[in-house]
Length: 173
Image 1 (cartoon, rainbow, N blue to C red):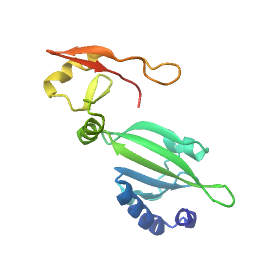
Image 2: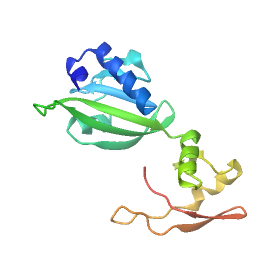
Image 3: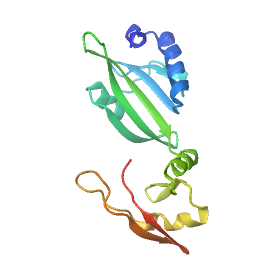
Image 4: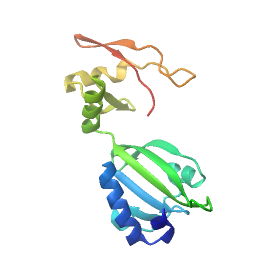
């Protein structure tokens, strides 16, 4: 936090690089309390760019922790943004935003951890999946399981794709 409070991009960039390497994030951005970029690991030359109009940054500038799925340069990312506060004064000094790219590598990781096939579909288009490509045309039509009012998925439904039957859940990221 002390590095962000300096508002010195070089200082913030050094700390941000170390944190990004530790977390293996695909996107890592630190802004000041107005939403101006102090460090952006995927585009270090964009220091000073105003990101306050990005919904996930703007909400964090107002004190909220935010998650969002965003499209940046044609790639999809799951983002998390949080306000950075001075520990003594509790005043907002900036925003930290980190993101993971939603791609086949993430799908494979989730498959390994869950022992289940995974597909990410946006507007009917498969973005990433562990299912064979010949199964993809059946995915958007497979539908999804509505999420309950409590935020938990309802029971999985059967989805038939080609000769195989799957049990599936879907929901917003």
